[in-house]
Image 1 (cartoon, rainbow, N blue to C red):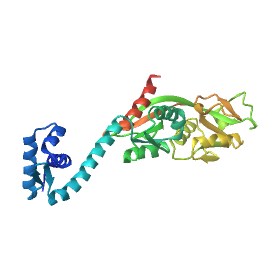
Image 2 (image 1 turned 30 degrees about the vertical axis):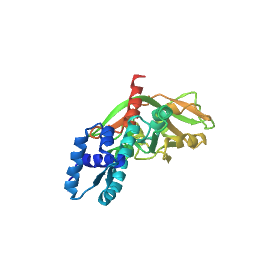
Image 3 (image 1 turned 90 degrees about the vertical axis):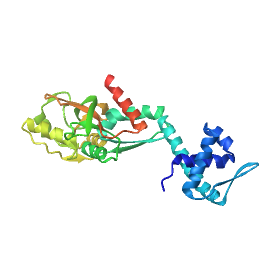
Image 4 (image 1 turned 180 degrees about the vertical axis):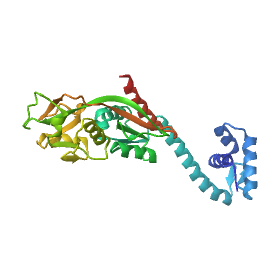
Length: 295
């Protein structure tokens, strides 16, 4: 049985107002149209739904049974419409963002702070992952947006990347580490010291492994950390030398080392899917992120 939803909408209005006239006024429709629709519905269902009286209309037992179900269905539809309206007005909703930790500290935190101030009703779900893992989360639909450091693994359709900001990393050591931090070091001298690095499988590890290889050096860190925020405490406690984003400095107990070879500039990128529409909330956050390009 395939009955038009409009018939049920009219039936619900007539039953609620107990009057074809008042229901027609509420629906901004004509009484004959409503009468015709109810007759068609009764014909489709094979039973009477209303009894006319001097006081208007009354539901038959069959009409009462149907009304209980139609009322619940219409309430659900109205709730769905109201929820969509709240989302369009950014009064409800959630955004799932996958990000690498360096991108979180270099760009995303300041944008999320502003976004939350302007849209306090929007919930944020932030997952902290390596760049490849964040991109996989976007590709599988677990995240609507990904913000990662580049270069990640090469992207293929339907993913596209937009550079949001650039930064550089610097070599650092503890103020208690036995080095003359005032002089300039070569990368070969750094390679001979205890190194602390992000774990294998991250784009940062791959970047430095490639950099050292280009200079004929082996990149073999003594300590591998899971996140970039773990690097500074390890360095501060004198466990070795690390390369960290300049946005994390200055930091107490940490000194910057000057290198003869320049470290490559890095970028924070927004990764999006081009084959899937984003929620209103995600689109608003995306717009805010893209505004960084003009700064």
